[in-house]
Image 1: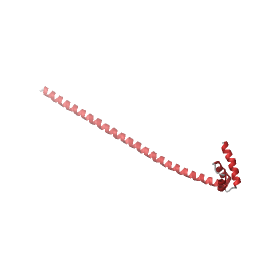
Image 2 (image 1 turned 90 degrees about the horizontal axis):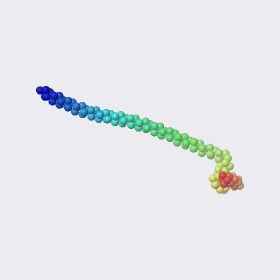
Image 3 (image 1 turned 30 degrees about the vertical axis):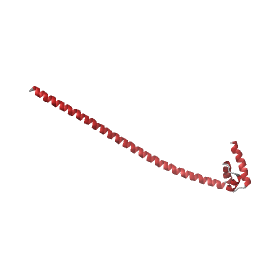
Image 4 (image 1 turned 90 degrees about the vertical axis):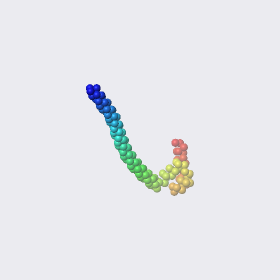
Length: 129
């Protein structure tokens, strides 16, 4: 009878040990799943933060492009005003770029002699530089 009780106790011990090992494996598996979900949530949060940051950068780039367009327009307007105020300044610029005297005289509405003088002076300066 003692042997029978010892056998039943041993079987119950082995069954409980098997249940413990199986539940431990299942618990580890659940912990891995939870850890994976937490990692996934963390990655989703990082992705959301990166997305928000890139939207912010996109908006800043658009603003910079708009500002650059405005500055370019203002610069063009200033050049046009300068050219209108001083045909000689524009003529000098054209001479430095290598335009011939006839074209400078035509574009700046100055005499061919003045254009020739500007080309001579600024062509010499350009070669010296």
